[in-house]
Amino acid sequence: MKKSKIVNIAPEATHDSVYIFHNTVLNINLFVNACGADEAMEIFDACGFLERSQWKIFLELGNQPAG
Image (tube, rainbow, N blue to C red; front, side, top):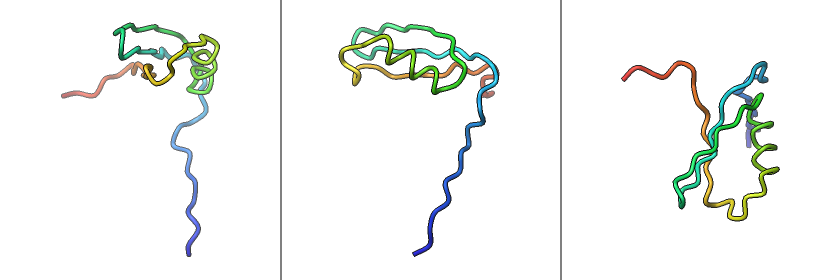
């Protein structure tokens, strides 16, 4: 069996981006600045939300794709 190669498609973050923590039950959005997804997850964990399954994390893009 051929071994699969792991490819990291996300480069190391060099600047802050806006991440949105969205609660799907209460329809609440919390905007945070973080330098990469790892820092965003650390901030999310530090918030201590009780029901993790009620939350989604989104990344705000500077250039939205044209429709």
